[in-house]
Length: 225
Image (cartoon, rainbow, N blue to C red):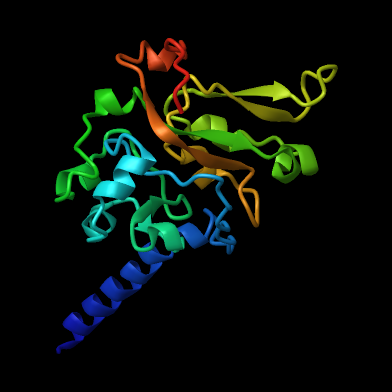
């Protein structure tokens, strides 16, 4: 290899290494601890699987969806009841409503392809706020990461102290708008466990159409979970 080739290969390797670890550093290249894995009362499975029971029955554990997920959300479960079957986690990314990569490759019908319009009306879980982990409560800092990154505007911030309108604010989740995408959990800066975590629904809650998401209007309520 000549000198130019060597330098080019070295630069490419360095860029690839940095890209692989980009979530481990903030904008100033200060090391950031990765989030821990929260214990969930019920796991989340992708939109298009309809319910946890249907997914578990049909999934053959081929791992094609895990390989196809462009955001690192799917991984094999370590639970003995679902060993090897995929479940969702948000340490490395979150589930974009416009993405249907998992449904496009599933050979068993455990996950069907879901169009973005349908995905915005499919509630696979809900965000849960842990007061004891929230930086706004524990450290009095002004944090709006969960609200800022929520694609359905399901999170509002309200003053922790109602008498102090300019003080730190805590999140309130509108379950009629939360679709369980995991953006709030992924971007929450609290460590070792995010203050916003997701819990799955046993049966996915589908609302068609979901009216005016950008304006934050809630769809009709449904009770099956």
